[in-house]
Image 1 (cartoon, rainbow, N blue to C red):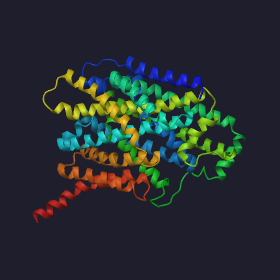
Image 2: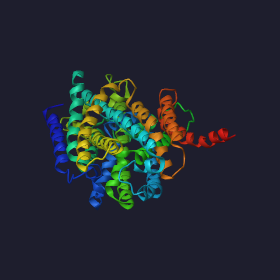
Image 3: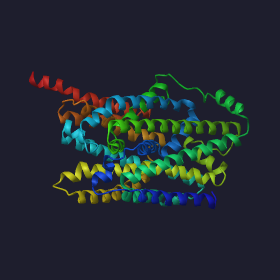
Length: 481
C-alpha cells in the first residue's frame, strides 16, 4: 500500500470517531444511553436502524469467510439468503408482537418476567461470554487480513488490534446507542462501496471476457448451487447451510441483546418490523456481493494462474489485495474492512455494557439514573479492552469460519431456546431450563470439535437446550411414583 491508502484509512478512523461522538444525542439516563429512550422511530431513523443491524451482522469476519468459502466451494453460500425471508416472517408475525406485548424496558426483562431471575442471570452470563469472544474474533480476522494485504510485519499484530479496539471503544463510550446506530449505518455504505469497487475492478482487469469467466466457473462447478448429501461432515451441503444458518440468524435476531436493543430503540412493533425488513434487504445485498467477490477471485486465479498463491483459502483475498489492487482502491477496501469490524465491535460493546448495567449492577441496591449512566460508560471501556485483548488468543480454534461457528453454536442455540420459553410462557422450573442451557452449550462444544460440520453446532445446541426442560414432567412422574 502507498501513502494515499494509509491516508484514506486514517481519515476514515478519525471520521468514524468524530461522527460517533457528534451524534451522541440526549444522554440523561441509562435508557437514553442504551435504548435511545425508545424514540428512534422516524422513517429516516428506521432506515438507520435497519442498516445498523445489517452492518452488525456482517463484520470483518464476513470479508474473509464469505469470499474464501465461495472461492473453495462456489455459489453455495447464496443458500444463506433462504434464511432472511424466513427470519423476517418469524419476527414480523411471531416474535415482535409478543416481545412488545410484554412492555419491557431492557432486552432480557422478558426472561425474568416469565422464567425467573436465575434464568435471566444465566442467559445474561451466556450473552456476555458470547460477545466477548465474538468481538475478539471480530478484531482478530481483519487484523490478519490487513497485515497480509499491506505486507506488514507480524510484529504489528498487537498495535493494529489495539488501534481498532481503542477507536471503537472511545466513540462507543461517548456516543452511546445513537452514535453507534448512526456510525453503523454510514459504515454499511462504506462496506458496499468498498466491496463493489473491488468486484468492478476485478471483472474489468481479469484476462478473458465475461463469457470466459462464466465458462470457467461452470466447468469448475463453482456455479453448482446445492449439494444435497446427508453426510453430517460436509460443511457446505444444502442441509448444513440452510438449517445451520437459519438457527444462527434466528439466535442473532431474536435472542441477541444487540438486536433486541435496536428493536426497543424504535419503540413499537411496526417500527421494529420495518427496520428489520430494511436489514433483510441490506444483508441480502452484502451476502450476494461477497459471494460474487469469491467467484471473481476464483475466476481470476483460474484464468491467471499464480505460482505464489497461498494454499489456505482464508489468505486468498488478502493476497489479492496485496498483489493486484492499485493504490487508492486498496485503502478504500481496508477502510471497508474496518467499517465492517467496527460496526459490529461498537454494537457489541454497547450491548454488553447494557447487559452488565441492567442485568447485574442495577440489582445490587438502589441505583440512581446518574450512577447507572456512569457505570454504563465505565463498563463500555472495560468491555472494549477485554474484547481487544481476547483477540490475541483465538488462533487455536482453527479457520475463521470454524471460529465463528464454534462461538455461535455454543451460545446462540441455548439462548434462542430460552427466548422461545419466555415468549410462549412455558412453565418450567428454572433448574431444568438452566440445565438445558448448560447441556446445550456442551453439545455445541462437542460438535464443534468433532468430525461433524461446525454449522451443525447451533442446531444441536438449540435442540438439546429446548428438549431438556420437557424432561421435568418425566422426572416428576418418577418422583411421585
